[in-house]
Amino acid sequence: MRLSNYFIPTLKDNPKDAQITSHRFMLRAGMIQQASAGIYSWLPLGLRVLKKIEQIVREEQNAVGAQEILMPTIQSADLWKESGRYDDYGKELLRLTDRHGRDMLYGPTNEEQITEIFRTHLKSYRSLPLSLYHIQWKFRDEVRPRFGVMRGREFLMKDAYSFDLNYENAIKSYNKMFIAYLKTYARMGLKAIPMAADSGPIGGDMSHEFIILAETGESEVYYQKNWFDINTLDKDIDINGDLQPLVDSYLSCYAATDEKHDPENCPLTEEELIATRGIEVGHIFYFGAKYSDALNASVAGYDGVENHVHMGSYGVGVSRLVGAIIEASHDEKGIVWPEAVAPFDIGLVNVKIDNAKCSEICHELYRRFHQIGLEVLYDDRDERTGSKLADMDLIGLPWQIIVGPRGLKSGVVELKNRKTGSSEELTIDEVLGKFIN
RNA sequence: CGGAGCGUGGCGCAGCCUGGUAGCGCGCUACACUGGGGGUGUAGAGGUCGUGGGUUCGAGUCCCGCCGCUCCGACCA
Image: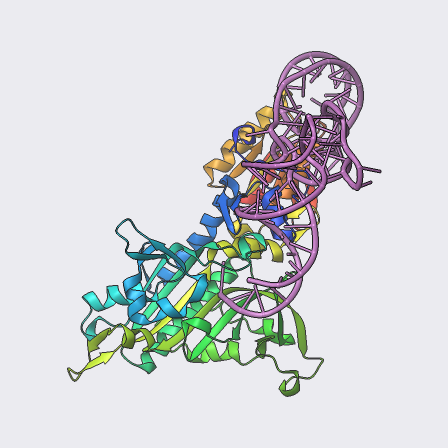
């Protein structure tokens, strides 16, 4: 992509309304534009990141056998009246009325809807287990939206729902998701720690929040010092095998949010305990038959007797993750994208666009990178070098290649790593060689 | 929803107290110089001062209502 005709309105100054780092950088890097409180338009650069995150989530859901569907944003209130949540949910639920005077709502979550789909079509234990998910915009009318996309009112969320015949099988489904979540966050370059959690208005018996560590995080978290020594995701995992030992290994180390952490009864010594801040980027629940009872979703068991299915639901805050990743990965100059979610792989800076040699080398590099499947953002604007480099740092692509007449005299370009700041002078072939493996 | 603020060109702000020609920086356009970390100069474009009413000869400025946005708290994926 050529920057000269790419819509990426970067800002030099901080917008006054943005207080938190990720929000500031998202606005300054031209990723989003606020439409109203807690509601954002996604501009090209932001949308690219959102889509990358979404795709990783999708792949890991598919990997544990969940099937993708897509449910609507607007739901009829009827099902919510049936489950009782129409009255329980309170003012966070955005209620609408259509032209016929029917009660509708903009979905904050989809338990009722998915249960309705299930009960319409599935009648036998033979159809179980089943996990369905979708990635859809949700709306919760927060009293006080803040922190940009981290706590918006409208947000993109992956929500999955599992259906099982009994508790034992439901826990198997829960464990699959537990592992899928660890893999999902790891792929995004995040350290996400599962912590025991309250299940809140969703209801249920067992629940874990996935928290990523970030100094600017919204909640205080506590975890055992050697938590990150647990590193069992590398080996091959048979997702259909017994996952309980693996899950248990992750839960063997202490980890709790401030709601659950009780300093009086903490099993750890002060030395072992790390107190820091974190952001919730996922939440999984097992809630048994709460919705299948309310909405009468049952299947015939082995004995032919009807059983209400055991369900779980599993959320990942996709749009929130964009902000959360920035909170976890930035410096004073801008964003530092983990490679897996970076909007482009490489930023190519042509220092002097009216220099024929510079442009020729840039075109060559651009073409070759394209050939090997790497995405390049090529800064071919007639701007001062300083502002181009500052923009590149702000946008935070993992690699920068700086092509200027000074280096080309001796046949080299500069390859710079955004994260470490280290740079080296390399020939064209050497640069390409770096990326071919 | 309690408390506190803010709405003036695309962005950040001054002007309001004490009413009288709407200003500054950045950005934008053109030209020139410049050219490896947000450069310099010259000349420009761009604003119903959030909105409705009131006071006044005259309102960005004073008064009242409304709307929007932000921050702290309570709440929350």
